[in-house]
Image (cartoon, rainbow, N blue to C red):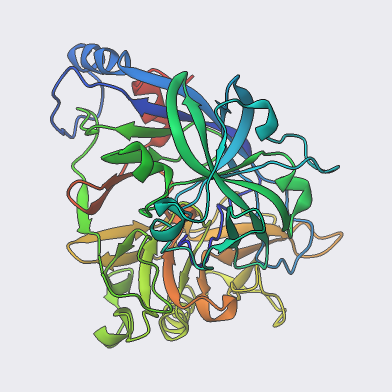
Length: 453
């Protein structure tokens, strides 16, 4: 999600693993093909390429829902383990493509399992207020930095669920897969409020991955990165570095990243912003004026592609039109939940009662998200999400539509979330300023890269 909103990644209640992959060097040039299987030549090429990859584990962890009417909240899910400081200290960080500043808990509290202790690191250097880092590189922070009593650069990071974290900016050496990244800028945080203490206590901090000046991507000079997240409990992949052209991966469909130099109150310049142009249910295009998809003079209405938010959210008028059309096309197929007060995660009010006798969901009309120059098709299990049982003693289940109403969350934006990117190869090409994607089996992609079962 965007840094102005900082909505961290929310995922289904699964215990699984992804794989974190850094592209160090590519020695063989590849071209896209539509091969349905891997030939011996393809296997050889893939093996050659994966020898140039550094692989680290990336873990998914999410608790099961504890109540029916769940509010939107910060939730730890996608983490990477690395070391920071001299000598190195082990830390675990949430990977968030919607945040800019990477930060670590630096003050020991009773509920934290892990912290970074700056007093034990000889390479730790606090950032003073007079530095250019503090004065100019924090311009995209939603809350302006300040100067603490010790003349150190103080930052406050807030989230849409009212969670917040604060502390001072500093530099230290980050070791990613054993490779040192000296003088990395991060937040050394000592206070804050969380709406989900149990989950937050399992990690040491957060790694920001958006386009901001202080994000991990920007500081490391990463030209592009890709990820492919599986559904279910299969492993997926995340790649940093060079072009991800594999012979078994179909051609990517690209939509340009939208850039603006204007500073607008509801526009996040550091987000991965694309132009939404329409939405289709089956092949029926919703009849909406084009103006509803264009940010207004305040910046409200931008469209952000975000792995840091689970579901997708649409501004009120567009959500209502999509909801009404989906209900109309599934009439007689799905049964609406007979609880008008049920709202999942505070913004998803289209839910259904699914009989226990159903082995699987029936065929459903696909929803196509129309971007400039590219389309993303959402179908099958990505359309409905199982929330839980209808009531105690009932075997029937509640499934909710995986598009929500931004207005109910107080978000002035369209957000394309992680759930709708499952089994989609996503590429963020910062050199050519574009986002590319194509449907694929992410579990097979892991195997082809030599990191799956």
